[in-house]
Amino acid sequence: MTRTPLLIILAAAAALAGCHKENHTIVAGPESDDTGTNSAANQPVALPPAIEASKIYRCGDNKLVYVNWLSDNKSATVRTGQSDSPTQVSAAQAGQPMTAPGGYEVSGTATASTVKVTLPGRGSQSCKA
Image (cartoon, rainbow, N blue to C red; front, side):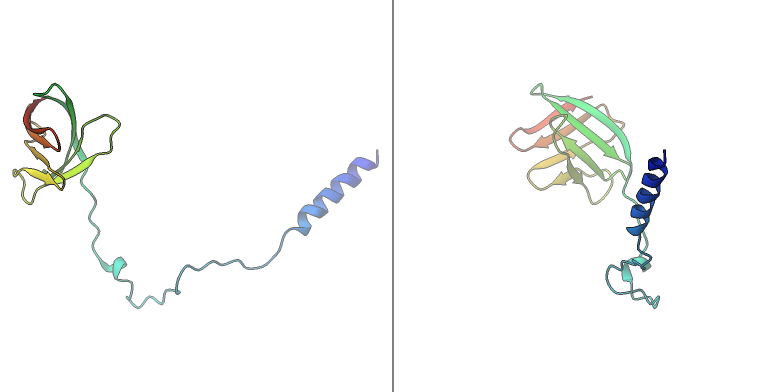
């Protein structure tokens, strides 16, 4: 009967022996002196555009193209397969064809039922939602 309280006391003592009362402050880089030298904190923050519409288009070669239209009306992401990584296409002005390096081009809008898509190795073709 006296063994249980003794074991509890020993376990509590061992747990408390592992505690150190040291100050463990971790500082990454130089400490801030709040003099305005952090130029990243002084820049305005612009959020990325949200997805306005996600559409699946069937093209003339009977293959699918997945397009996520972004809310800035100047960019979109294009995938040729549902699990493929997207390629972001963009234009300088809204309404112009959106392009990306490697031969990607998308012409159209999120509300249109057809778009013109140019993909590497597949050429330019019209696709319907």
